[in-house]
Length: 300
View 1 (tube, rainbow, N blue to C red):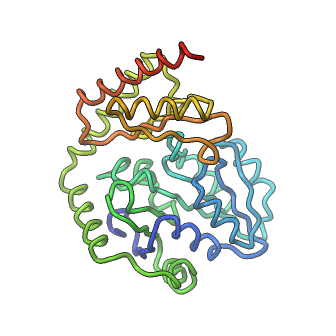
View 2: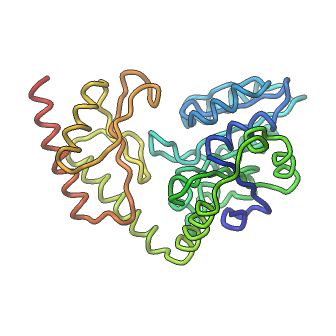
């Protein structure tokens, strides 16, 4: 795993959630500062809540707002910027190039949650930092095994001293069981497939671009998504569940996401593209979505 994300060493946690929950409190002291994107995953929020440091949020992917916070930070204490690599609900990519530039300028550290980027972005699917050629500027990279690795568990990769410290201090690692051998074997096999079959990533992006273009042409709002996570803004909770139910009845499964997964009143249908999807399947899904949309539009 460490080699895959181009870091010296990695350590394994029972889940990806536990990586963030256990790691973040270890990285900061009482007078330090954590700066996070407002759209970060819930596990990052939970890790920040457990830390004694102050946590500030910047507007989603807004580098001017991030710099505003960095300018006001107490330079006598440590600052760390934590961001998703690919945002789990929005499907857009963090501006790691700008984040690392600001981190250098204001002497901050950078941690990237690459749960939704591994197997998708970067050289051989090695993540967001690799996508921007900034692995050396990204201090810590975490990932989960429950997405492209088709298993369960999570990991943290970085320099030896930091990872060694985490191994001996992260409570969610120390006081939790390790992942089962079968899960570990699945991860190793997934890594092998990702490395040896690059055509899978190529096909994933072809599917992503095709689906995104078709959805936009049909008039759906997919926000700023540029990845295989494609949200369709619906708005009302009840309407979102109606869409999801009707889609499933017609052979199309999507995740309906309401608060607290997204902001209240901004419920979405979350499409997740896979390399194994065919154009025919994508066409069917969009056709069913269009018909569902027309039906629901007529009853409201």
